[in-house]
Amino acid sequence: MRLEQRGRLWQREWLIGHLDTRAIDAESFLWFAPSLLALLRRDYNEWQGLPCGNSEQSADMLSVATSLWQAFDAAGAQNQPDAQPVRADVLRLADCLLQRQNPDGGWGWWTGDVSRPLQTAQAVESLLEAASAGLIEFPAANQARGLEALRRYLTSVEEDSDLRVYLLSVLSRSPSGKDLPARVLWSRHEQLSTPSLVHLGMALENIHDLSAEDKQTLISELKGRAAQTASFVWWPSAESKGMLPEGDRYATALALQAFLRWAPGDAMVGKTVDWLLRTTPAEDGRISLSVARVLVALLRSTHLQEQPTEGIVRVAQEGVPILEERVDESNPLGVHEVSLKDLRAGPNWVEILLEGSGPLYFGWSIRYALSDDDPGPARSVDGIAMQRRYLSPDTGQPSNRFDVGQFIQVSLEVTTARKLDYVVVEDFVPPGCGPIVGSVAAKELAHSDLEISPQGDRVSFLLPVVPEGKHVFTYLLRANTPGSSYVWPASTYPIYRPAIWGQSASSQLSIQR
Image (cartoon, rainbow, N blue to C red; front, side, top):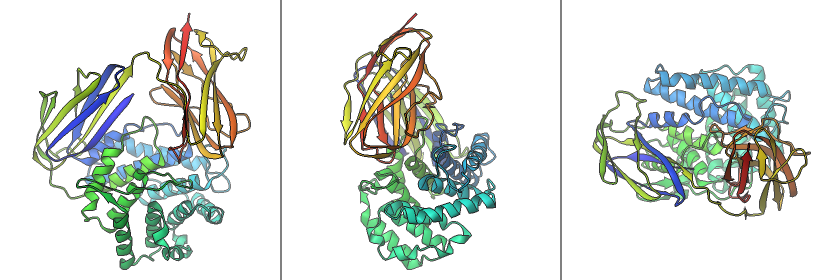
């Protein structure tokens, strides 16, 4: 398990953590940096060098890597060793996407998958961003075919207004986008969602059809939709009815990009940055469109003019001083790290004190293991349920006992009350077992290959469509090490509507010699 917290500190901060009462082992550390860029570069470690699992993830990673490199360049840090792997990722991810483009000009989820509007838009957008930054070449033939595919999709996605406006914003980046029907949507901009409002504004500006008065109107409309406290500003988001992500983080990330573009000096900007820092922990080995938009927005905010950070940082745990270091901006990518020890189940408190000027960016992470205790029964939310069983591949019979070297067939039964799009099925790997890549079976349903988390503790695969009803999916494990343990539940959810989800019961599995 992992808990995280991060933020921007001006003087003093108390980090309050609460470990599960069944926590038996905890490893925690605190890191801090005098620049937002250093903190975000450290976040990028979660995905650096990650294989191109699918086209959407590759496009999201390419957008983040491009923005990170541009932030390095603006800070004069592009020649530092920490920057070089990011440059390599830009080239690798762009090549991966170009290789996956279908003959019709579009992109699917993976090689050989049918072309899809959202994945095509993400791929084209990320490649255009990297090319405009001078980091890659987007060959004219590939670009023309991708843009033509997006134009075809404009008519096929009319019922998904958010996706349609997003397609317009991507098309508007090209010289051939001058004739786009973007202006006709401005008359009803008040009815658009927050992400669509921002995408429409960007599209109009890209085709040189957004006046100074329009910009003022757009910023005023965004201010009217914002929720705020004395310290934070964010944009609540209604449940999405289309393919784009729902949730406040996605809407807030797009709103921040709008302010950075049209009102960078507004007082809301700093409070929005603080809210996104507080609410966006890194995700283990996976980057989504929502997380990518947040990171891109934060990276573009690193140029904000702030008082230079300089002073003494003191850290205390349970009131006992454990660190004192001087910080300044002499190294724009410098990160200080301290290990927190002797954490216990229940509340723990850590104090960070900055004596000096400027902001300090910090993060705090706890990883902990739980005692062998059954985590609970199956759960279902909003019409999606799940059941997991372990079967002998030879007999097809259920079993919770296997021998070292034996294959284990994992059966995941998913029942949905209605058709769902872009569904992720995720399962925890039992201790002592190894997943077999290429072993996913879903009968007649299209699906991705098995993806394994960097830690090797979870596997997942994606289904573009799951019809209403009951469906059984399987994959293989190999029993490698003897032992007995509880296995955390498997789960399933639509990637763009994570409020709908199902979870299996936990399981107990024994491997013997």
